[in-house]
Length: 237
Image 1: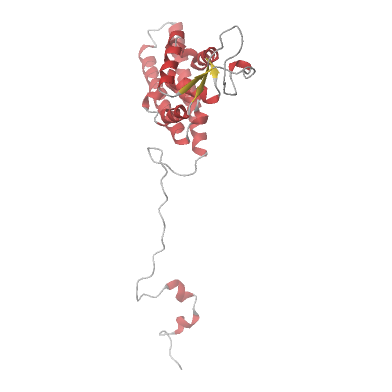
Image 2: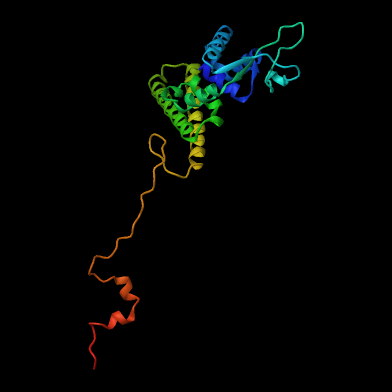
């Protein structure tokens, strides 16, 4: 998850490590427990060794507001302070990011992974977006039904606060299902073609008009030809 988040953020622009860390914390939000300060730089090092990102020193005057960097640095800053390194996505990193997004499976229904994938939906193909949304909806619907069943079994034994907590969980799940339904409907409205369970387009079968059997008159042709109507049915007086 951390690697995917790093690739997605660096896809937007190169960043210093400090800014990248702040953006990761904002992106991961409530699931930031899965991310620690100590895990970022070892992950960046491994990604650099694999050629997914490049590490550079920023050129003077290229740092933008928020820590993002535009131009590639050719030499470090000539100051007394140590120049902060800039991390940039490589072509291999962009390809790996696209592959990770396209190969998203059922595990993306989990809240943590779903949030990270959803944050980068603008760089995800429509079929993958729809697959992730539908998987998440199934997961939340299952949770909603479990809460309903638990509420029906234990409502009489719960005090007022416990009952409100269960109702809050149920309402939260119902709101998310409605939200996902709207997103799925929006995605489906953008793709007029039909797709199979794997998200692949289904070709419309070609329709051919059946030709008249050999030796059988064509009723449509006969009806429109007055010369054919009189033959065989009338005699000369």
